[in-house]
Amino acid sequence: MTDLAAHAILARTGTGTRTFARNELARSALLDRFVTGLTATMRDAGYTALDAPGPDTNVVLHVVDAADVKPFRRKNAPTFVIAIAAMTDIPDARDDLLRTGYPLLVRGLANLCIMVADGPDGLKVRFVTLEQGTYGVGPGLADAALFAEVFTRVEPLASSQLVIANEFVPDLPEPLWNGDAQTAQMLRAGRELDALDLLPAAFPIEEILGPRDLRHVMLLYGIGGLSYGNVSTRYLGDDLRGVPNPDGPVYWMSASGVDKSDLRTVGEHILLVRGYDPARDTMVLSVPPNVKARRVSVDAIEHWMIYREHPAVGAILHVHGWIDGTVSTDVNYPCGTLQLAASVADLVRRAPDPSRAVVGLRNHGLTITGSSLDEIFDRVGDRIVRNVPME
Image (cartoon, rainbow, N blue to C red):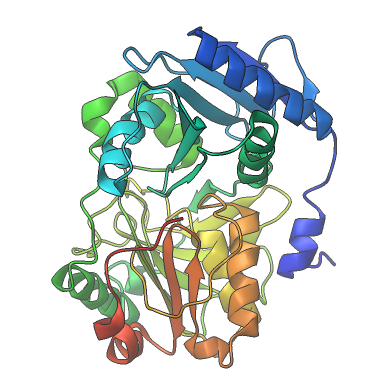
């Protein structure tokens, strides 16, 4: 029988040869200096450089012109694309950094954006992630030390494994087509998040990308648009079993890219997750027939791990906010990866009471467990602040 514990799933992700390639659409002395230095560091760390990106390339250094960013259209979602742009100046304030770097990331169809500027104290490097995380390296470092630090920040993200595939099975029992008491809690939870100003406006990705690239992003990342935060609640009926593991958890979860303050329609706003199929790295969903279903939140694998290990957890809230004193993950892994899911599950396991845990996701937000969504808001709702601490 397949071991579905978080550590066992991670152990099966493998440690084979990692490859990378450069895709240089822009050239300058600054870009050559940075990309050449990062390339040498990656080679020293055991990565194999390819002459050109291919369908099985693990990492692509997508060097772009900040004034005219062109996309890199990968063939497979597991390819990790880093958009690298030279800047004359990089803002320090987080909001300004996001406004500058996020369009570069989105237009480049990248997983991570790296902006580089040169100054009297050396290179200044700033990162922007798809989850709106921001952090930096330099200035004040010699090039060798800076490239080593940049690689330290990039490598865990680049080697992580996405679980974003969805299988929609039109077998949801008719009594659940309009939801149940648990989905009603999800609607209340979304409205509570909105009332607490904890639903930041989604970055207008559709205003940045044309139809073709927007479809490409949706296919690659399993998103229906960018929205932030998600809620889930364990299914309490005794008539449905897990799939393919009948002993696995079954739970309701918000869909990707929907307005979290108006979670009403089953199959469109809310999905019933029946399980995780490790053979295909796929989340299995039960939906009503004749419904154009949306994908479940990319964090479904994280919630699955928590529900599976902790039967007393009845609901999970993920929000882009913070509570002072929260212990967080060591690495800001991308959403929807096995590595982030296992890291969060580990922190929940180590909490004094895993059924009432508050854990942080580095440069990202919070995952909070409870007996119900109502209980979570009663316990911590007034302690959550919107600003997530960034490095």
